Length: 61
Image (cartoon, rainbow, N blue to C red; front, side, top):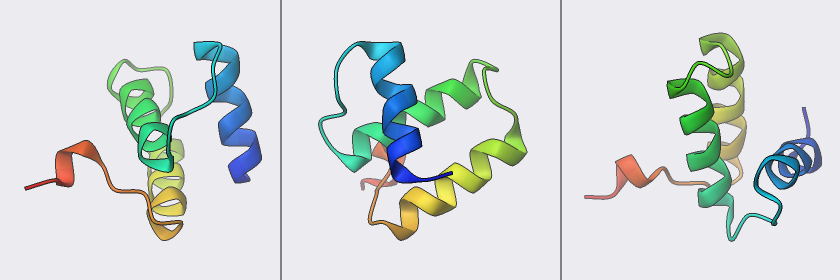
């Protein structure tokens, strides 16, 4: 899965582009929490976005 695919899914769901890569990660975290994606898929997305520099809202201290 590429960043472009992740953004496209976000845009289709939210009808707007993500404000940042962090917003994209938060979106996929919500998708996982609500049961829209499974844990395996979520972990792949999380690690991919994290390597791209994304920081989860849950990681801020």
